[in-house]
Image 1 (cartoon, helix red, strand yellow):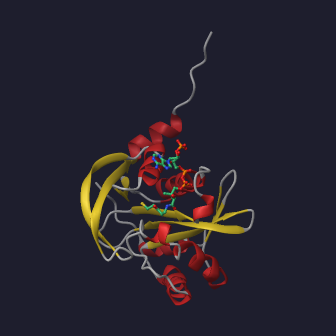
Image 2: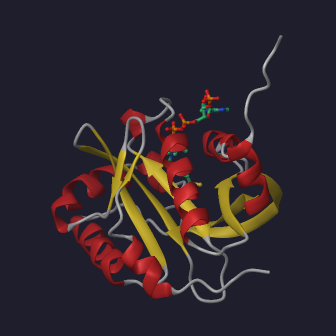
Amino acid sequence: MLQELPTRSLRESGAVVLETKRLLLRQPTLADVKAITRIAGDERVAINLRRVPHPYSVEDATQFVARVANAGGMATFLIERKNEAIGLASLTWDKDERPELGYCLGFHHWGQGYATEAARALIDFAFEEFSIDAIHSGARVLNPASRHVLEKCGFQWTGVELHRFLALGSSTPVDRFRLERGVWSSLKGWSDAVRR
Ligand SMILES: CC(C)(COP(=O)(O)OP(=O)(O)OC[C@H]1O[C@@H](n2cnc3c(N)ncnc32)[C@H](O)[C@@H]1OP(=O)(O)O)[C@@H](O)C(=O)NCCC(=O)NCCS
């Protein structure tokens, strides 16, 4: 049974900083607007994100940062690598909806394991911080890289839904995934056997 997530806690959690081996995840500020515009303004990124229009303007990014700071049901992190903004990762929980993981990386940073590293940090944070039973996510059927990220994080396929993507101006099939708390804690606790 899904527990209700206190939205104020989720908003406050945006101030948390998460550190991984190579990355730092922190709350985006207005100083990041230029970098966010560059990342989300790339069509190769936008066509895989439901709510990002294309073209994507500085004004869009400014509104996004303001929304992130004020929205109750959202914890959004800017992903930094060596002080450079390289992407975004978020956990969104609108009232009556399921906690949803999302992420994107600037095109030049694809293929180096950063999305998986950032997603795992956010997943750990979400399960450790909130009494949630599961985290949901989705990837366009035509987005094998994102599907792979989710599978590497332990998500399991639950079906296909049709979702509208702003940059496409149409709806497209999306593979839906779910990560159960039990699966997550099992993966975290799985230690190597000793061979004799
Ligand atoms: C999806 C995205 C976040 C992946 O970022 P990334 O940092 O390259 O991801 P990772 O390197 O952690 O993992 C990607 C995996 O997919 C694999 N992959 C990449 N392209 C692939 C393809 N065409 N077919 C199959 N697997 C593919 C990679 O080999 C890697 O797996 P590996 O570690 O086993 O080699 C990035 O491509 C992106 O930002 N895309 C646009 C926005 C987006 O799609 N966001 C997700 C919305 S659901």
